[in-house]
Length: 208
Image 1 (cartoon, rainbow, N blue to C red):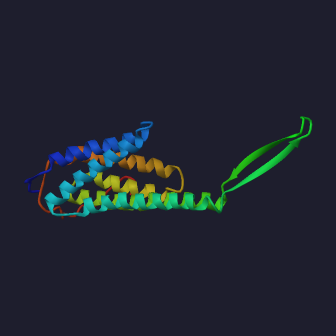
Image 2: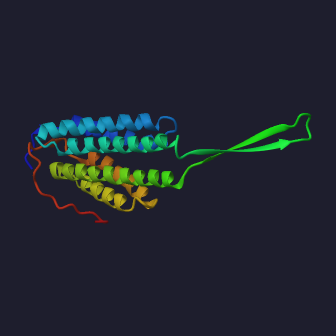
Image 3: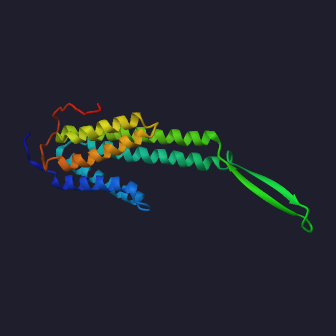
């Protein structure tokens, strides 16, 4: 393809951002901070690439990943705290011991989380994974079309199968593999791109 637009800075920013986002899941106490920093770095990289090639799909879809994730987290927190007053209940069991002078009373407290609350949280978590994976797929499919880098296409396919199998633990493993391919994609993409990345590439993956 004709070369001309320098995206080497965005390539490096996306590479290190995706590495930080992946490592964030393994570093105790810092996972949220590293994950957020990594996400912002990748978002900035995609913003720069989108602006330079005149195609906003990578930035727009990756931004939706963040927005949809925050929206579902808010719903989960609302479900938890909104149910504390009505659906959580404390049972107090009092036992009087007559052997001590004047008697004594002991109380046992038990907290019960209703099954509908647990089921709702699990379903919302699965919904969050599926919705975020959908926009991840759109992001990396667009990056594959723009850059011609096969690893971005593979990442899109791994995200797809991760979303499909998210109801079981294997889905989380596939999503982890997808993020590795994102790193490989930024590592392998060219330093220069043509202005319009509209060339059609057939996304080919061993698991597609």
